[in-house]
Image 1 (cartoon, rainbow, N blue to C red):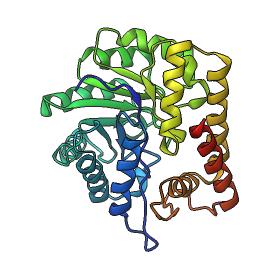
Image 2 (image 1 turned 30 degrees about the vertical axis):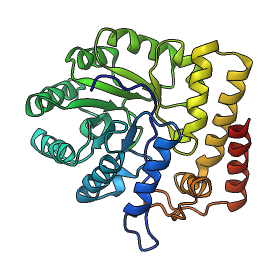
Image 3 (image 1 turned 120 degrees about the vertical axis):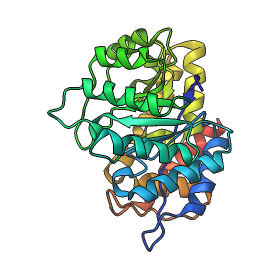
Length: 300
C-alpha cells in the first residue's frame, strides 16, 4: 500500500453509558465515514482517546475498524505503549494481526522530551525488520507534549521507503512544503492536521487532511479538497474552508464529546457523547446549530 490520498478521519471511539467501548456504534460509524467520502481511516489516535484505552482495547478498536472497513479503504492505527523497542514491536505486531494496513509511530509517545530524535529512526528500522511487508506511519501528536520532528529525520524516514503516512502538526504551510519536497520520490504522503490552511497546503503538495472536523464532516472536507484542486484558493474555496474551521473551533471546548454528539445527530446512530479523555457537558443547542449548518452546506 503506497497511496494514501484525501480525506482521513481520525476515528472517534464511542463509549456506552457504563464506559465500555461501543463496538456496534463504532462499526456503524466506520460505514458512515466511508459512505461520506473517507479515503482512509486513522484509528487509535488522539481523537480516538488512545491514551485512555487499555492495550487490549486499542487492539480491539483497531480490529473493529479494520474488519468493518473490509478493504474498502486502508486503516492506520497507532502504537501507543511500550518502554522499549521490544514492547513497541510487540504492539505493532498485535495491530497487524488485527488487520490494520499502516502501523503508526507516535513521536511524543515513543520519544521522551530529552530523547535524541534519531531514536525514532532506530525504532523505524526495528519495525521495518520485524514487519517487512507492513506500511508504516508517523504522527506528531501534541500530547503528552508536542514533538515536531526535524526535517532531517522526516527525510530519513521517507528514505526508508517504508513510511506512507505522516500526520504532521506544525500548522505551517511552508514547513509542509519542505516536508513534501523531502519525501518526493518516496511512498511517504504528508497529511495536514489543520483545516484552517488546508486549501493552501494542497497547493504545496500535501496529500490530504486528518483532523478534528473530518470526523464530523468528511463529505464537506472531500468537497473542499476537490474544489481546491480544481480552482486553487478562490473565494468560494476560502469560504467553505472558513465555515469548516468555525465548526471545528466551536466544537473545541467540549471535544471529543461535541464531535460524538454531532456525529450522532448526523448519522442517527444514537451513540453516547461520553468521553474518557475530556468529559464535558455538551451544549445540545450548539450541536443542533452545527448539524443544521453542515446540512445546509451539504445540500448546496
